[in-house]
Length: 295
Image 1 (cartoon, helix red, strand yellow):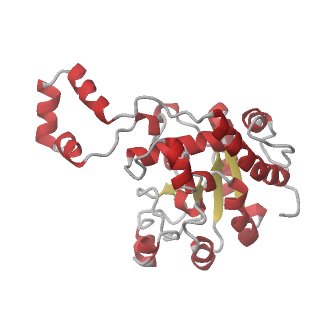
Image 2: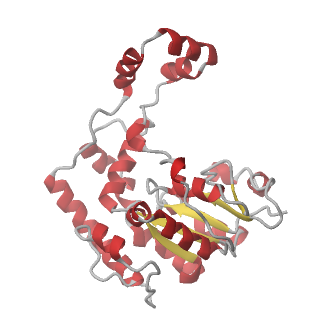
């Protein structure tokens, strides 16, 4: 029986990792944990539950299954500094899949997610000052370097969100080749998009009680018109996607361009920057050129 993962989707947050997790889970011979984001190797409180707790999430896997899990906390430095050490100790042979997205787009989506979860209550302009993780989680070379140092290029697969959206079947095939899946995978269009921040409501304990309680839910659906329900729902929705000022965008570009220059040198994507990120990753060969030497 398999009790530990053969591969892990390590992030980045808000880069379609949930969708990739669900797509892989539909394939016979691939077992994905029902609990997405166990965050076992990153979060101290989860790690304290012990390996038996972690292994229990793979208990239903068949002996020949390729087992995987997805935890975006694994690429959230400096928030979780012990992740790599724990991975080396407990899953030294695992492979890692890292999904990246235009760094500013990822930052904005991250902000929306944290706003819906009531982690951030300020506007995005104040949040940039008060929550440095919005920026650090989009610095992909900094997040990747510990994995490349510890496990090597052959054990880490870089994926780009923009390319995954443009040619999902091709990218799924590449992921499956990487993890050693012997069958021909198929991207299921009917699964839709998982975990979309823009469709979320801000958390509210009282509202959630009325929405989730079975009896009250039936009453709400049968007696309250949809137009009223949508109007009430709007009280907790983000009305407009937040926009950064031109000055903020320029500051972020300066930070991210330095990081992307390093990332691009590793992947053979020279002169990668915020300005050309989307077109470059969409047009690049499906198998990235790996350049020796990590700065």
